[in-house]
Length: 470
Image (cartoon, rainbow, N blue to C red):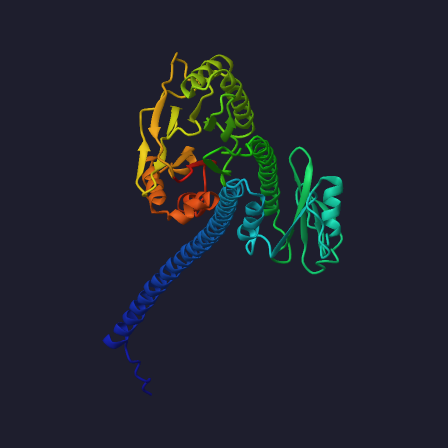
């Protein structure tokens, strides 16, 4: 019996084994590469995670920095807003203070307050002055009464204002919906109360501080105006009390006018006078004391009295002025005056005159010709040098008019005195003879074109002397 053939391993089996071994080796290499790749992926994932964490941290830091920056910008913006608000309030306070102190007229001061404050800082204002007569429709809030009583600013509103230095009160019956701020007007004493109605639903704290300060400055302006008016009224009363009632004289008619200044304290220095001399002549005088106000009015009265006393002893205008000059030099140093004296004698067709630093007199002849008595005047009275004045003579035919005046009639600050003298001469020459017959009307006709239509910085005197027609 034959045994089955055992087939020997052929070349294909060995190749397969080698292939399998080779495949195992390749697989192992692939696995190793996969492991390495996986390890690299883990590393990359870790790095990416760390990067993401860093990015998140950076974003958080940038966000925090942005919030900080926004907070700083907001704070800076708020600071700038506060600084701008403070600058605006200070600028307004300066401008408003200049406005209320620019005038010495109480009505002007009160009139400018609504223009300044409404509508930005108040919807309405009321000024209660204690020395003004009460009107039937006057009604003052409880806040205004409390401010007057306690001399402290008062706030009245639906809710407390919590304003610095200001007391809080319940709402006012006069303004239940809007707050009121009542501020006393106090300088040396409380003279009134300024009450403001809020422009909105409340008063701002910084604005209220500004309003209190403005009220204080307004009180000073009102007090200055009140004192000025008292000073001015006293000077004017004294001035007018010393003006002469013009005498009558044979062959001569007189007319005079005095106009006080309309602006400033320029009152009290000008005067006119006319009085008979024991020898039968008539002396006429126009003078002007430098300086203004009550002191000038007092000095004017002293000069007027001294001049009359000297005239009793001497009828020469020049010698009267010389003695007056000597008296003023020694008794009132640093105070000066101008004056012109004209002397008329009955039946004499001439006038004798002398001047001390005074504007020249004008003479209108019967035919209408006007001439200026422009002989150089002597120095002003009181100038600290010895001086003797000279008499001058001018012809005055019957029907002539002599015009004596002070510089307030003809002098304008921007033009000087010469244009005014020329205008006065033209106006005098243009007058009709019928106007000259009414000497008081003639004075008005001369004044109107020169001073009646303008504000006057100085007071004015004019004295007309008209000889009887032939």
